[in-house]
Length: 331
Figure 1: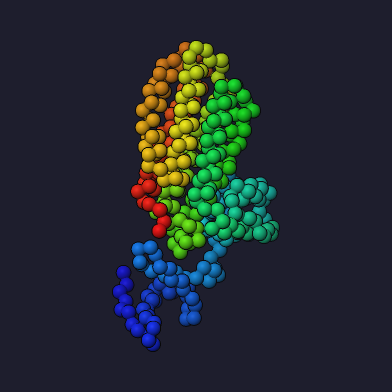
Figure 2: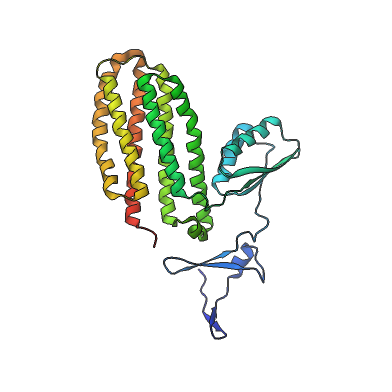
C-alpha cells in the first residue's frame, strides 16, 4: 500500500504523486496519459490509457507444440484476453499445424488471422468488448442449450438419428459463447475501467461467468443424451412416458432458471430449486424399470443420469439468479 498526501496546485486542482514502481511496471513516462475512473463506491481507479502500450503481443514458439495441443493453447490465450498473438517457429509451419490454427480461430468469436508467413501466424481479437455483452451471450447460450436438450429428448422419443447428430454439432456454438463469456470476464478483471462500456459490474460478471459454465455443462449432457439414442431399442409400458415426462419437467426447470438469471427473479429461482425433489423421485422410479430392457439398459441409465444432471445444473443457475437478485441493479 502506498500513502500519498493531497497537495493543492493553483486554485482549483489537487494533485497526488504516483509510485515509481507502478509507472515503471506499466512502461509509462513523463507526458503519458493515465485514465481516472470514479467507481460506484467512491474510489478512483487509475489505469494506463488503453492502446498506449505497444509491446503487448503474446509470442508463442510452436516448434514443440503438437497440433492436438495447439487448439487448447489458443483457447487459453483467447480466454485470458490476449488480443494480439503471434505464433512463430524457426522452421516452416507445417500444413497440419496451420490447419489446426485456422480451425481454432473459426471457433473463437472475434479472433482473426491478420497475417501469415512461412514461419509465423499473427492473430488479433477484433471484437469490441462492448459489442456483445455477457448477458446477451448468456441469453443466446440459454436458448441454444434448451433447444439442444429438447431436441435430444425428441430424438429419443422418435428414434431420430439425424436430429441426434444435429444436437451434437450444435455444441460447438455453445462452447464458442462460453469461451467469449470467459474472455469478457477476464478482460474486465484486467481492465476494470471497461465496466461502464460493457455495462456490467465486476460482481455481476462473476455470476454470469459462473452461470455460463453451468450452461456449457447442460449442453454437454444434451449431447450425451443424443449420443446414446442410437443404442436404445423400443421402450414399452410406462417407461417411455415416464422418461418423456421427466424430460419435459427438466426442460421447464432449465428455461425458468435462465429466465430467473436474466430477470433476477427471486420467486422463479426458488420454484426451480424446489422442483428438484420431484426430479429425484422420478429418476429413482425410472431406474427401477430400466433393467427389464437388457441391451438398452446401459444407454437408458446414461440418459436418465444426464437428464437429472441438467436438472441439477438448472438449480445451480437458479442460485446464481438469487445472488444477482441480492446484488441489485446497477445504480
